[in-house]
Image: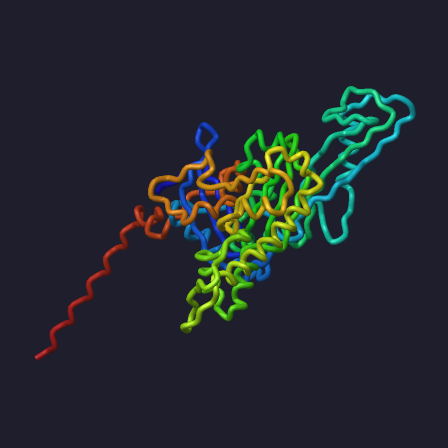
Length: 415
């Protein structure tokens, strides 16, 4: 397609597949998708954590190579999302006591931020710091600079994760011959891309139900308040169905065709059966009970994490992810959350993303994390393709070699 300027490349290292997407930002700030590639990656990434560095490196190299071929340019660097089981938020307080009244300056606030950043967590490191409100007496303020106080309390949300989570990502990217443009906190990118300004301001929980994990982020007053990764997802449902003595592929199809997250007590499907392999059958009621039980467990874990913030979540719950595409998910949430709670399930392309004509992206409803990473990118990630030997200048300026001298004719033999 020729060289393009300012093409952004984002990569999602998901539990089921490695996906890469290329986009170009339009003048209005929206993103136009130029190319997409993916490769299934079984047994390489578990719970969002790279389990096999060699296989992940090889799959990443192939996926980015296919993306480069489609674009007609060389991919030099990529934006990568950071997620996975060890990613979580931790609240931290920093107290500062003054001798009498003190006029707060930016220098004082920066000192408190530095103190927070110096906190050491066992087997974890700070990936992002999200400042919260400051407390002065019984008041909460967003910007205390210029106020006179005797004591100031600063509140921070530290996003932490195991050091190996990012280290392994960088190893794989380097092994694939690429550079890391930036490692982005995937759940925060998703919130910026998927939540409306009103939802982040009035309060809501963003729940991403993936294959191996379910990520929960809580926002209100435009600030992240809580983040956690629950090690349960759609693959656990599939695994439960294999207890019916079916293969994983068949279990996945049964889940998609007959599964439901909520089965009303009044619904009676006694006698209705579902066909299995090898001329076997199972009651549809039993199959649905298996699926429902696992979703009930996942939602119970979600509700546990958002319970402390329920009164501040005026706009309820926003759900996305591949495992969210199951019937009656809204009813399943309503059953476990007392009171009236609004549940919005994201469908279709984000408003600020468009797909170029002829570009195939498969199922767009499963690519929200990838879209979010793409929208967060800012720097150009591609360069010109290297010239092939046939295009090198010496082919066009090659000097002609002199023709070989003719061999002398042999002298005639004497008579």
